[in-house]
Amino acid sequence: MTMAATPPPEDVARWRRDWEAMMRHYQPDRDDLLAAGLATAEQAHGRAPERVLDVGGGPGCTAEAVLRRWPDANVTVLDIDPALLGLTNAALPQVRTVRADIGSPDWLPAAGGPYDLVLALMTLHYLPEGRVRDWYTEARHLLAPGGLLLVSDAMHDAPVPAKPRGGGIGPWTVWWDALSAQPSMAPLLAERAATLSGCDSAEFVASTDWHGETARRAGFGETTALHPGAGHALMAFRR
Ligand SMILES: C[S@@+](CC[C@H](N)C(=O)[O-])C[C@H]1O[C@@H](n2cnc3c(N)ncnc32)[C@H](O)[C@@H]1O
View 1 (tube, rainbow, N blue to C red):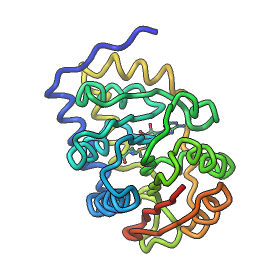
View 2: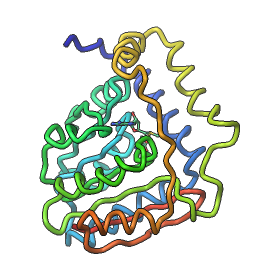
View 3: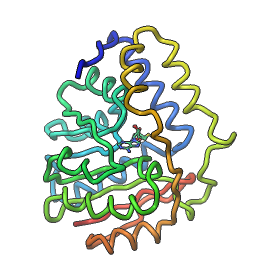
View 4: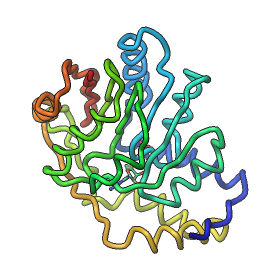
């Protein structure tokens, strides 16, 4: 496989900054939510987690926040999207990136492990219900004993309607349209188009109870709903 050329650093920085701004449209309390999750991981582990996997980590904004808090952590970002992984690679050379599709159990060997902390932020809603159930079992396999899984996504019982206004046309589309107009991004976007055609989001939304019960059935011990708010919740599951 030929790797696409890397865009200039100033473009990479701008697109990653705009990504964070775009994600705040969906998760206004994103910083508080992540801070609560990382504090819980420290408490669970008794110190800073050393091995961290961000599933659906996209352009690496969460990986960067993890490294700000735990500079010595070994961080892996796994994602299906080569354009987003390209931005992570360009901005964070110390982060390992893995291109894999969590829509099939084949992602498990690609992910490696064991990990002290696995994150999946705004990612599981891409999968249909049956795959989310299996995914919890698979994610548990990646964790060291006592390790923590953090899941944040739209959940029915979080206070604000989960779907963005405007039938899904919104900042997400605006961000991608703007990126598509950038000549420096053309090689990564061509690779993306070749990889992702037909991969649509299932837009799966369940309740915090559903996620808790599904994780329990997958073998997780402790479940905590950490931060319900603004249409999204953050949940922690201990192996
Ligand atoms: C809404 S974005 C969230 C990205 C990041 N977690 C964040 O909070 O900024 C969802 C991410 O999941 C990734 N994704 C969607 N379906 C996937 C799949 N089947 N396998 C791996 N990653 C997937 C997308 O490429 C994207 O990076």
